[in-house]
Image 1 (cartoon, helix red, strand yellow):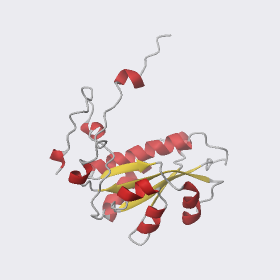
Image 2 (image 1 turned 90 degrees about the vertical axis):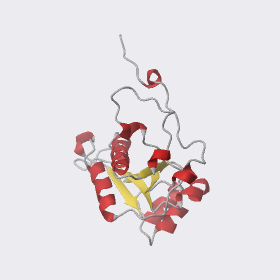
Image 3 (image 1 turned 60 degrees about the vertical axis):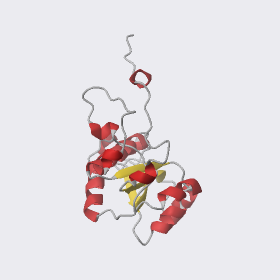
Length: 190
């Protein structure tokens, strides 16, 4: 039950929806499967994200029960230790070039980040959590998943699942505070 997660360290401004400040990246997941319907909803939310020229350069590649162990092996050991319990492991991959003319897309990472946030917030709407990871054996991912490095870039890994609150609360970093608003937003006065 989520009522045992203490979000009191977070101090949102008036009007900020709880979907934002009650988002967290847990280190403990239950192995309860995520349904196909839930995954469809999560990735459809990402589909509606904005992107330069509406190119939608992102691709989410997720594990199945059959490929779960392979996906775990593509993470660095520190992430393998906790991520192996999550029922879904995936990678965010992005196309380096625009579809309409083949030129370099300087915004593929930015746009893919927007899609990542959309899928993360949709997961929360379904009572699930995500945790993004940079601790990845990137060179091995390209080979294992048949990704052409000249056309696509593996940006990160992630997990999706139901939080194991009792285990997650043992981690002192489970509810992280945020910088003060003035540290991330400035109004330029000229």
